[in-house]
Image 1: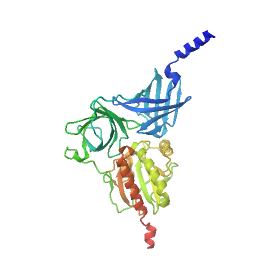
Image 2: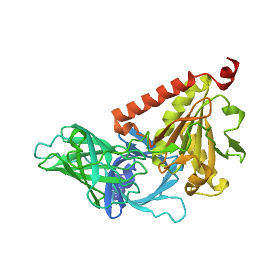
Image 3: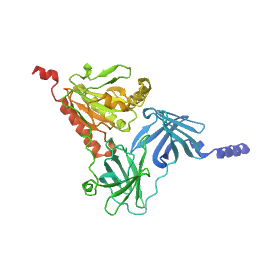
Image 4: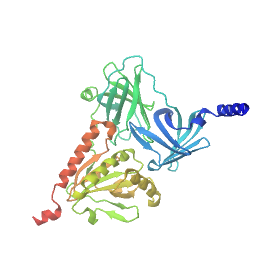
Length: 411
């Protein structure tokens, strides 16, 4: 009996700790983008061979739609992002790839080890909370060479915030000061970004993104004096050629039927159009708000329409991506597939200076465009997000209060 017990103890001791304990729990993870390691928090929940992996955008958890862990191999699928994570557990660490499932997409290296808190800095951190504006100090990979807004929040050495570009924001950057250097990052299954900065003697921030691109930031009140141009106004970035004309749109629903602005469902209705795609991170940010608007105001005459321009030119190929998007956000409003991103100018020729996803168009009961907003500021931007949602909700209320064409004709 004693011999059998000793043998049992020996066999248990021979099992690697990682295999015995499974993979549930928090992990410190990284993906590699252009040779820069982007750190992020990751969580795995395991129930037998079934697992779910969670990214984080601040405290919001973004879970996989399916997953498995068998024979030391982890696989997680995120249908609504069209991505797959594959990794192998070895000596308590995970190593593998995270990739988009589009053809020819380049996978990112992925690695993770068990969560450990970041070490505290030894010197008092600079105070950087507040609103900033930033502009490049050398050419970067931005298609729109304009300045951006930077929102920072701080508690001790811990800092969080977001960069708001014309198209929308970076998602929530999180990190901390350590020995005079601020390091923050974001990765929630998309938008990987490494943010590093130090405070200059003149009060500006010297910023490097992804160890490649450099910027100078100044507080909003000092930005012009520091030579940083004013960021573009997202409500004026895109317009229409003739605001007195009705706005026209059309696309295929997911059954292949053509739907256009001439459809009876849009007659005398206030219509909110969002030009986007399932591949667009900021379109994911905007979707929950549009669902709220639709549920709140549909009975009063609001229609919301997603005009999606997908990477795949064939509807059959695009349909699964759009269906995953609809399912993930519980979208009750009309979704149309209108073409590919390079066809926006052809399909929507009334637009002037289109270049941002999402672009949201607010149309009155008379079919005319009342406002166009480029991009979307998510919850990561704090007060800016609250302001944007309040303004757009107030605009919808104002448009709904107007008389319909039928009512005006009867007067």
